[in-house]
Structure formats: structure tokens, C-alpha cells
Length: 164
Image (cartoon, rainbow, N blue to C red; front, side, top):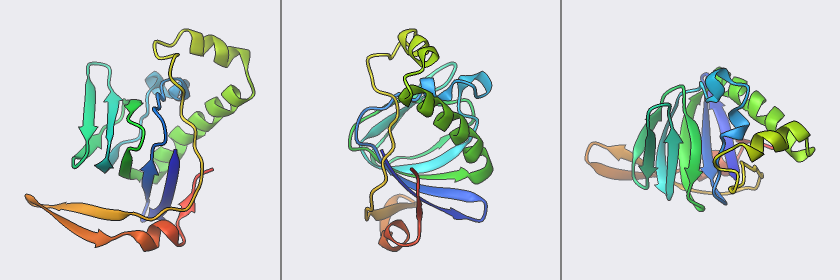
């Protein structure tokens, strides 16, 4: 996963490129209800992603704007998917701290991580991996019933912070 981001007035704006299918179920362990409690608003430029809730799965595809309320887990992402996200920074930091702790445990080969993975219904898929590389993108925004384009390269390749 390539995640380019910057912070604007208490919100984190991220442009994410998914390199391979990601199931974040195991990374959410330790959050309330083992689910992300941070709401996200966004737009899918390319590909498809699935968010799982207690009572349903929601699929967001290319050209769709979306909202994921607290209580979701990203469970499936088509390789090559590109998404623009807007998330409250404080809630995002809380969720990402738990996710990073779980990712570190996985990378260290923790036996508790291996036990959790063995019990996961999606254990055949690889959990989230993040890499930082520069990128540029064209950003499209919905404008009523028609699409409008504007340049997004400067904030993506300029001073934006990249996750590690």
C-alpha cells in the first residue's frame, strides 16, 4: 500500500494506492469491538474496496463517493485500487496506533499473532503492508451529476507527509 497524506484543519487527507489485496481484520484487534472507530469520507478513483460491518458488507467501486462510519473493517481491496480519504486526525491516530502495534507483532513473528491469524476466516490473504513512494494523481470530484477535474499533484508530491 502506498499512502500519501497531509493534515488540514484537524482532518487527514490521504491518497492511497493498494498494491495487493488487503484484509485488515487482524490489524483491528484491540480497538473497540475489534473494528475501526474512525469515520472516513472518500472517493474511489480506480478499483474496488469492501468495508465489513457487524450486519453487512459494503462495496465501493470506481467513481463512487463513500462514507464509512465507525465500526467497520476494510476486508477486501482489489489490487490497483486508488482512493482519496478524509478522516478526523485524532480518531485516525488512535486507530493507526493499534494497527501499527499489530503489524509490528506480525513482523516480529509473535506467536500470539500467529494464533490469531490461524483463527481468522481470511487467513489465506495477506494483511496490510504499507510502503512509501512518491506519486502524482489526477483528482476528480463530484459536481452534481457531472464530474469535474482538477490538478492534485502538488499536495501529493510536495510537502505531504507519507506514512511509513
